Image (cartoon, rainbow, N blue to C red; front, top):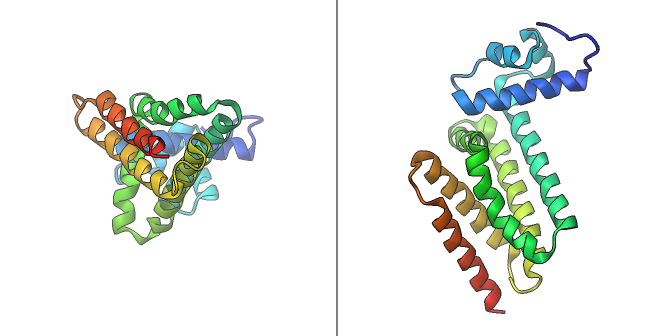
Length: 195
């Protein structure tokens, strides 16, 4: 335990955030302890308090870090994919993430609940949702050009659908996620066909 030889401050912080992400998603905000997070990160418990004043602040950092990762993914997609590939990726990636990273959606749901009852999380929820809408709006603009008059509103609806479909799959493993995504993509394509 404690500092590993040669480890940097940035590395320790990153280890803490990664361990917190995993533990908070698995156990939930109330059950996860700072001691367990330190153990998962391989650092002394006191080191967490050096970087983060509270578990609230640590959870916010976990979510901001995950949001930054999504922004970078979207930027990469927009810079490397054709419009058709981008269309497919916009609808396959959130569905894939439900299967491959269910902890991300569990953590999002946890934050939504916390944000509704704990003022410390209102801003984090707003930032998380705004970041998601902005990224999806960028995808919509790049896919549709001027065919969709209000990409921001479309992005808000898509984000709500992605989160809602993930919640349904996590709550009911028998839920047919593929069919639901097929319908969602058809609805989106209908908007493109109207132009």
